[in-house]
Length: 312
Image 1 (cartoon, rainbow, N blue to C red):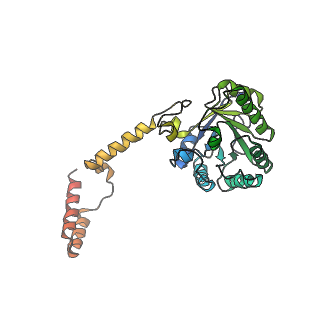
Image 2: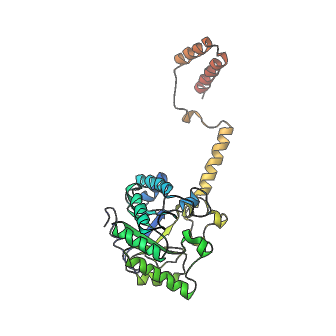
Image 3: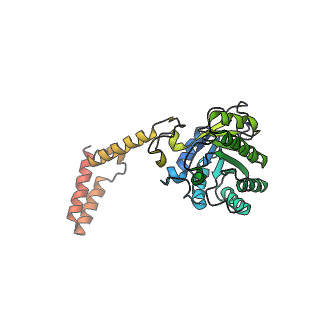
């Protein structure tokens, strides 16, 4: 068991969805978001490769590299000390071999400061990679259903498990990941009955995103649930499965607009935000020094500013 994993969450929650309090998971990508996730008491903080989209502006998760992910991991690790920290293995750093997968996972823990890693998919090579990473002593969270790293195969960001064969595959893949030692499995964009079946079949927790209410826990992207911005591929529309628990984007835009207006009208900074003072005697001496330098206009500007400050 990892040192800061509450027993009521990932390692103690079990499967079935009905045992214990549901697990809360939220993504974070930098120090400020990690601090907020930590202070809210969220159980698991996921440093997702979704950073490629919501932080770096890409249309998919594919472009982000392991080195960039490690920068995000380090920042989050400095800001969130209480939750379980899980770092995504990005596309391109674990597909070639189990050796490559283990090497990448080791970096996420040693260099990124994470407690565990997450990898996507259920192909035999992915199952082998998960098994090798677990055998190396690293906790692994699986991810089945819609796996964004495989959108070229899936035909885009489309829900999975909507046919009998596809639904069975979701459950079989989740069971295979459990068999090789994964401590939890993310179920993304699958119908609720499929997620319920997978949760019932597993002895490890399921974490749903767009998978209905019957999972052991839920995960949402930080920016989506706060209403900060939307994924480019959703054409500025929040994903259907995401509830906006805030409208932070509106607050940010309003604050920036007010800042712009106050700067342009010279309302900001006012006296209360101009804290650093210089005595009248020193202003006179400063003005005299400027005049000796041949900077008469600068001397007049300093004197006028001092007089203006005294009159407010």
